[in-house]
Image (cartoon, rainbow over all chains, first blue to last red; front, top):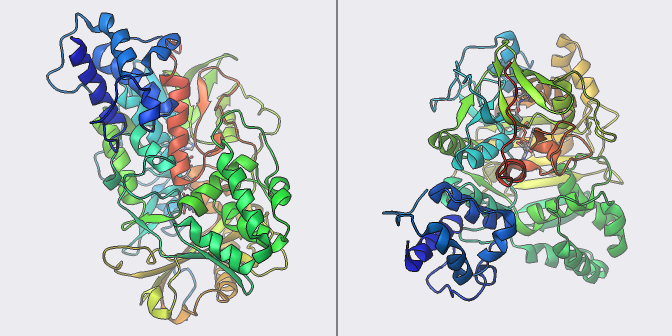
Length: 91
Length: 514
Ligand SMILES: Cc1cc2nc3c(=O)[nH]c(=O)nc-3n(C[C@H](O)[C@H](O)[C@H](O)COP(=O)(O)OP(=O)(O)OC[C@H]3O[C@@H](n4cnc5c(N)ncnc54)[C@H](O)[C@@H]3O)c2cc1C
């Protein structure tokens, strides 16, 4: 997947976890938690959705990389480089 | 006047009777028809998780786990789902077992708070529960009345009106409440009365605030844990009440449909009678009919003491964990008119007519000093419900109701039903000539059909917040984990599923073959 495709994957996951949030103006360099209501339960869900949709395991010590869209995409890039982009959102 | 329970005894079609008990065969009647696995073909292969109980906490935990592809089976002893908040049909009418109101209401689109958290976690939408907000409710102590609705400002103004010298103090208390992290799993017991007493000085106001919060969620007599007080304060006063037009049914059906669509198994009439263990871990789950099931982990919503009693060899409860003794009688009156036509417009009235409000196991079979009057009609529905209903609830002495021999039990039910109505007439227009049907249930009914010791609605006084038990793969969810009520129970199931199954990635060793 390309960076753009990974970004879309994350957006799809966020839309599923927080259906009442407007994600169209999400800034990539600002922490998710400063732009939307996300608590620790929701962060667990990002990890769980990635595991469910793409079979990637993210160890707890790496959760810190999932702070902003930019850092998340950078962290996931090597993990998802050989994975096909989904035709439609996973889940 | 006909205000006796028409077919009084618990041998009549009150919920307990309709469901039967898996252990003794029970009735073959299927109350619920969404294609649940009634006869039940349980898998030989170990499940990732077995959940004991298809109440609100068990169903919510099941959805979380099935959504994330765990192999889950919910084992429920009874013939239908819902536990303490189930439903039944009696003489052609639908009744809810527990539901007065869903607390923690928030309007569609709200991003914060328990209800939105819960919907997100279960991947449900606002419309799935179809909640309609209340009209207004009140706390009535003799002639002193505080009204409130789902806008917190209303209560603030009422307090400033009725208790002017307490207004600033109340605001400071509210600030303390808002700052408190009531959901932290590491909170220790703190006396809510001691903390509230640091802010408010009028004992009447203090009691009037505690009254609804205790009635709707205190497992302990007279005082509450401060975190539990804060949970209930937010649930009742800050967020408020709502109800789906058709009661608890649509909520339960939504949960079951979701759970099954994700591949979760639901087995009714599948009571667990023994949890076999080796001192560290559960090794087998034995059902009432002798079948055995294996699972990597077990979540139990049966209650703390109740779950430990299933363990074989027996396990002693950790210090402080004993069954509670707060229980209720509940009367349901069907009317030939709407409560509003009699001049009763309030959703819920919490009343007390004694000098002090006592929340404790009463010395008499039913506490006639205080109670709750709920009208399921008085919510903001699009159209009025077809029939008028009033429900009156009061504290009850579990021992009396659990031990009364059968003929006396029946007589006493009638007698106390009438006395309870008479006492409540100070706070509701006399509706007795309009009653067309009555049902009443007692702590005996609750014990019979949910298995909770002493008919305890809010479980044991000491909660086990992290859900741990002496066995490393057995966890508690629901009432005795500490989150109570309809929304609370679902959050409890979610929290424990997240904490002990989904949050940890390492595989546990499967239970050894039975
Ligand atoms: C009269 C009454 C009125 C209420 N009113 C309201 C209200 O208005 N608003 C509100 O928010 N809350 C209300 N509640 C509280 C609410 O119903 C409960 O807090 C909630 O339903 C608890 O859910 P739970 O899943 O923790 O427990 P339960 O519902 O008790 O679920 C436990 C389940 O486990 C099953 N079980 C037990 N032992 C076994 C076994 N060995 N094997 C298999 N299955 C077993 C039981 O049959 C039961 O179905 C009321 C409760 C009552 C009784």
